[in-house]
Length: 109
Image (cartoon, rainbow, N blue to C red; front, side, top):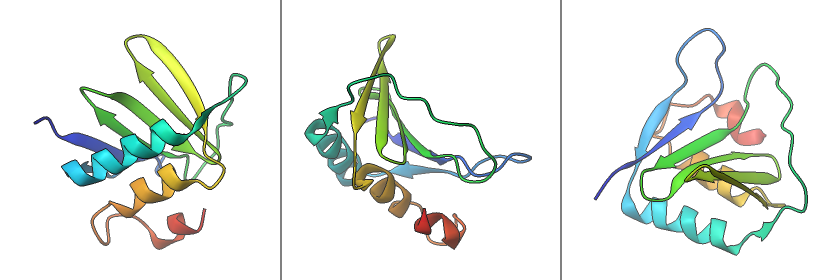
């Protein structure tokens, strides 16, 4: 079993926080992804300071990036976007961070 790694993009002058997911957390995130509808067009995420999204990298499932209403998956040189109107993927992935690792204001995004 290969561990999946999560990362919150929040800092611009130092390393972003990284943590590992357990099997149950990974499975829930994959299940959420599979339930989302495809996005109809290419999505553009604007660059800004502060919180800029969260990612999950799983060797067998690819790299996921969630911010706002969208989740992107990159696997085998292919990119796919899906719509997550309720931000379920992003919020659940943020909730898997060990207590105290992330600033509390992130959970209000």
